[in-house]
Structures are given as C-alpha cells and as structure tokens.
Length: 461
Image 1 (tube, rainbow, N blue to C red):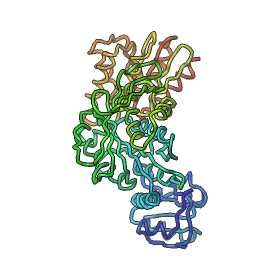
Image 2 (cartoon, rainbow, N blue to C red; image 1 turned 135 degrees about the vertical axis):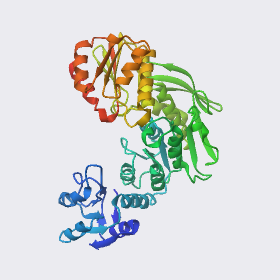
Image 3 (cartoon, rainbow, N blue to C red; image 1 turned 90 degrees about the vertical axis):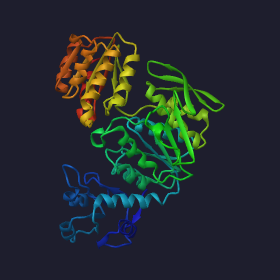
Image 4 (cartoon, rainbow, N blue to C red; image 1 turned 45 degrees about the vertical axis):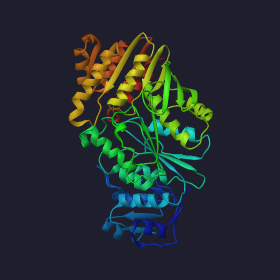
C-alpha cells in the first residue's frame, strides 16, 4: 500500500503547506473526486470539460485527508476543513513530481512500451512472460498518458520486482515527460503508423516524438524495436549498447514458418541457435510482432524459452480487442476498443482469414488523422475490396470514403451500406445477418461501436 508523509509531498512538489502537519500521512492518491477513498490525497486536474478544483469539497466528503490546490480561493475556503492543504503552481505538474519521487523509492527496472498500435497487447504479453519469474506491476488497461502513468506508479509496492508501463502520446513532449517520471531501463517500440498524425503532421514527426523515450539512454539501457518497420529501422545505433531487433523479414529475433488458424497462430521462433514453436491463442500477424517484442524482453530478463512459450499460449487479449465471440453458427469479431489505419488493416486480415459463409465488415470512422483522414479511409476501402469481404457497412462521416473506395476497387454496390449512426447499422444488420456469417466490428473509441456488438450478441442466439 502506498504511503507518503505530507512532508514528502511538499518537498516533492515544491509546494507550500497552508494548513495541517508535515507528519500527517496519506494512503493513496486520487484525481477523481467520485472515487476518493479514506485517507487519500486528492489532486484536482483540469480537463477540457471540467475543472477538478470545483470538486475539492466533494473529495473531502468522500474521505480525502489532504488536498493539493492551485486555486487561491480554494486555499481560503478550505481553512475550516480538517484536512491538510498544499498550495502549488500547477496540479498536473504536482502529480508528475509526486510520481517521480515515489518511483525513485523502488530500485527496480521499468520497461516502457510505445508505438502507434499494439502497445497494450504487447505490454500485456510482456507482463505475462515476466510473471513467470518476477512479481510484475503493469499499466492497467491503457492508462498510458500523463495522468494514467502516475496513477500506475502509485500502485508500486515493496513486493514488485519489475514494472511494465505503456506510453502513449498525441504531440511532442508527452513521451519525454512520461519517460522522466518512469525512468525506464528498457524501451520497446512496436511500430510507427499514422495515429495522431493530425497533430504531428508526418510519420517522421511521429518517430521523432516516440524516440523521446530513448533520449539520454546510456550503455546500460536496452532498446527493443520492430526491424520490419520502415521508420523504426532508421533509429541510429547510438542510444544504447544493447538492441533487440525483431521481425518476420528482418531482425535477429525472427518468426518463421507462420501458420494461421481460425482463432490462433503458430510460428517458429529463431534466435541464434535457438528454435522453438510458439503458439498464440489469438489470431493475426500483428500479434506475431507483439509476441516477438515480448520475447525480446523475456530474453533480456532471463526467462526460459519454455516458460515464454507457455505464457504466450495462455495469453488472452483485453476486452474489445479482437475478441472472437461465437453465437451459434455465427462469429462476431469484437475489436471496438480503438482504431487507426494499422489496427484496422490487422483486423481486416483476421476477418479475411476466418472461414465463413459470408464475411461482413462493420467499420466506423478512424479519428485524429487530420489532413490524412480521407486518404487513410480510402486505403481501408481498397483493402476491403482486395480482401474479398462480402458485405461492407460503414458508420460515421469519414467512413463513407471507405465505402466509396471499396466500390471503385470492384466491390458490388448492392453489398455496400453507408450509415450515419450505429442505430442505422443495427437496422441493416437485423435484416441481413445469416447463420455462418463472420462479422467484424471496428472503429475509433469515440464511435461507440460496442453498441453494435451488444446488439449482435442480443440478436443472435
């Protein structure tokens, strides 16, 4: 259980104790006034649609024993409450400083995972492999941003021997700030795609932003990268004394003799004199890459290859990540957690390889693509046609370009349905689905396409 003295918090944040005692102790930290527990420190953060400073009293009512604030009027109105009050210049910065201070209490290695897609699955595979030998802390879900990473670090306990954290970003400087908090020993790169290109403008800039993770890496640091990725292969061998390069076409750690199954995939792992059959209980070539990255980390930390193979065989993806749901003679591929061009292509390859009487793709908008959005959606439309998908249903404003391009590339127009809402999609599905269909549902998180998955599960017995 996390414990910090008020004195430690004041020193870490370089804040000012307005009221309370430096000898008081907090047990846990929360940034959500609705979820504050007894004797926790509440740190109010500002979002696009809310300001946590407005809910400081609510947090106290929930049991917060201490509060950080950057609002002078809160300093004044909290004087009558029996809580410790610490004044700082900026609350998010304070959160980062406390997390950095707390991380330094633990002399354990951190592995940081970043990339345009596959981060969460790779992080989870790494944790599963390392758990064969170590007590592992890992990022839960995709707590991979400037709030989620500190909250993950606050879960560190004396029993933990190693930590695996995911690092996401949407612009320059974010990865650098996360790296400075976590101080990772190992950096893992999955790929460089076009996610968040709206803010960064090019894949070159995305690479530049991602490689903030390895700025100032020293000889003792380790870099794991996808050797088949055209951008990652440009990383110069100057950041570290030790690299692991993995891939199917290139790299020292390779997957060969790949055999695709309906719900799994097998390959032969080759590394130096080592050869070992690896079976994944999840489909898709992209998961071969994810597992290779995890194996590289396992090799670095001395995990036996037999244990790694067992861990990967037992691995199951998180909720809404390429989960294949069987309903009678029908299969629903639930991959609605998020979407970008790389993950959309990966999901379509799974649908393409799945045996079925008919293959139906229900695709929503891919968000945050900026000027590249139209082109990216058209690329997916071409892939739909090239993959011989039987029926395409789109939902949203941008996904109409998927539909248009699939028709241009030869898909029959009467097998293409363009919808504005998920409700319209469900009405079409209600009329057309049959036994033996395999249905992929995928779109960006903001499209809420879990509504379609839920409809299918309820509709099909």
